[in-house]
Image 1 (cartoon, rainbow, N blue to C red):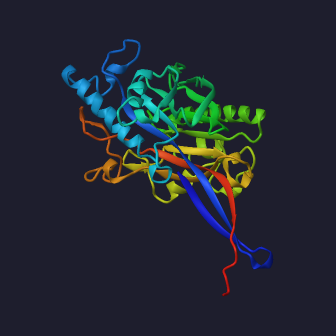
Image 2: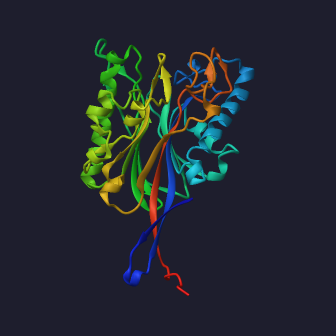
Length: 359
């Protein structure tokens, strides 16, 4: 898909020059898959607490396939109105293992896109992981690693086993780029009590970002995930020093378009009867127009919240239509809306136009 922008410029002898700017458009997205577990009991993790495993054995396989169809239906549509295709890159969280991602990308609704998978098993107590799906035709993986988040409960001194952070560096249509996929610790026990855990997760992100910048001060880095914090919480606003306004972003700093979205009343989920934007995508300075770099640049950020994914009635009217409730499958999708950004890359083309005839 290409976006076109036309601009006129004056030339000698009043010959107008029409400059046609064309842009390649790629979608980069993030989606919390809400308890995408398979139907098999894995004794090494706490998967028996998953909604699918709580169902009767006869119903599990059918519900699993319906859940995959729901996820695939959403993924193929994210950003398609401008890119005319499914996302080139999509970070995912809250799934059980690599097998469920393989089942997802091989679903009939997604198989045509030929997604590759980057994934590592996390030590999370619930057995859920982070991952990256990428179109093999668009993105070439150069390096992939898992960054372990080691935190401890202050009262007991016991380790809190949570999700690792996935770091992938590669080339998007030839343009070097790094992605950090997150699912930060939950607010279990209350926001204030659990806050240090998410600050620690942000600090790990910051170390990864600083390390990438130390190798290349103009690194193009995309930070994405379910942060279990809003864009205005300490972890994002202070620890990451993410900026609301693009004009305030300097080299090696981070821009977060979801700060303004939160202020404008948008949400990606409902937590304790309130709307939040826990799902966010942030970008380093090098991806902004202000950096004057070649290759892909940030164009626009969005929340994918179409009507078919939205609760129409009841307590959570207007919020995501979740897939599990009251011990059963609702036919919904996830308790989070996906988020996505468009990246564009200019293709330069200039056409000289003759002055109109005066005859």
